[in-house]
Image (tube, rainbow, N blue to C red):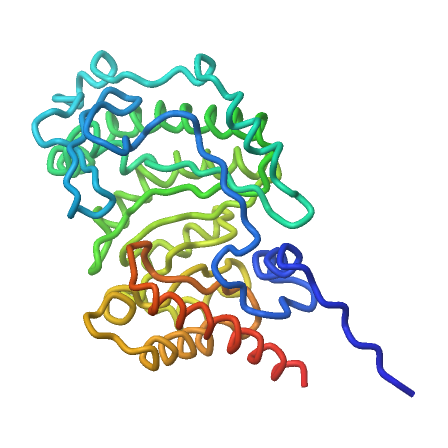
Length: 332
């Protein structure tokens, strides 16, 4: 008697299994979000060149800077947190033309791709773009009630954006970006983050959940002290899960409740001067061994910066080959 072999999954089906962490699990480790098609919000929260963003905050451009643009020092729109209501300009999402987003979404092959909305500049990030980092950090400590009120207004805006984006593109997931950490710890004491940032972030999560949308939470830095909070709020994925966190421990604690997306060391491997293909392949195998058992792992760099094409080729080849081998071994 022959034993029937399992049907090969499509990349979309395999990615869904990795995200959901259920059933028989994925047949291979997804190579980044290989079956994901992204649609943007049709306004600039981070302009590609020097100039004003949608909130009226000014950005400067420097080719060598990460991402190119950065908030211009001394040209922040909120100069006093107690006057934020008169100084803030929140874009009107109903005045935005969503037709191009609708057109882009209509061209996506949904049988092969999940549609992801790109929602950047989360509540904490937007607060320091509006105020400047130093002023924002002091206000979180000295004026938590005013910061809570401002973040509530910003969360209202984000919720409206997600609703409009979903209406235009019928989303499967949202990439929601808010960088909360340095490489050593959170920017804020965890208790302050929980008191001010978390409640309004929860509202954004609740919006996504009510629409049936996966939450792909982006946050760079060492945020392991609040990852349990994200899990409890219902985040489906966390990216780019940088190695300054104890990823192996976090996988053991939360791997049955959240999927990890990233982890392949950008800083000390992929972008290291003179890195060899063998070093890249060892890093890929190490991270897959650490994060893939039980499913819930999507392999990609721990940061999105330009890499040598040879480095990317070695990384992607190793994800493809070793990422299939590991699950084959598990079912044998």
